[in-house]
Amino acid sequence: MSQRQRQTDVSIDDIPVDVSNTQSSEVDPAEVPEEIESITRGLAGEQPPTNPLVVLKAARWWYIHGEGGTDPAFQWAIEWVRHLATDAPSDVNQFDAFLEYLVTVGFADETESLR
Image (spheres, rainbow, N blue to C red):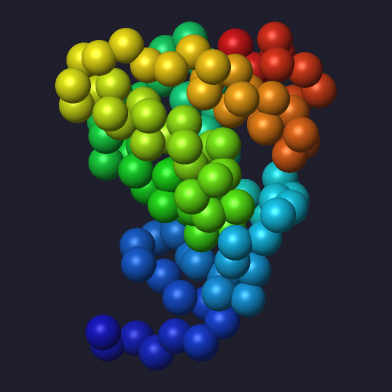
């Protein structure tokens, strides 16, 4: 790595990882990078992303900055990638939990506005 990075701001790609704010139980929507917010909203929409690498980028961010492996946005992103890879039906209950989580986090006032 040719650039030096501060220990509190590590980046694997263009999206910074704030080490001091990892695996917190509360996510402030204002602190979600634009690209991650766009992918996350896409996962909630009528035409979700079909590139598994793009979805995994969002999954990684939610894992690091959300509730880890129990974060509903992380879990839905992984479920969607599984669906893309296997063409198996996705878990509707997990999708509903994801939408509810986005409302809880503050992405929307109600789940219907996400679709």
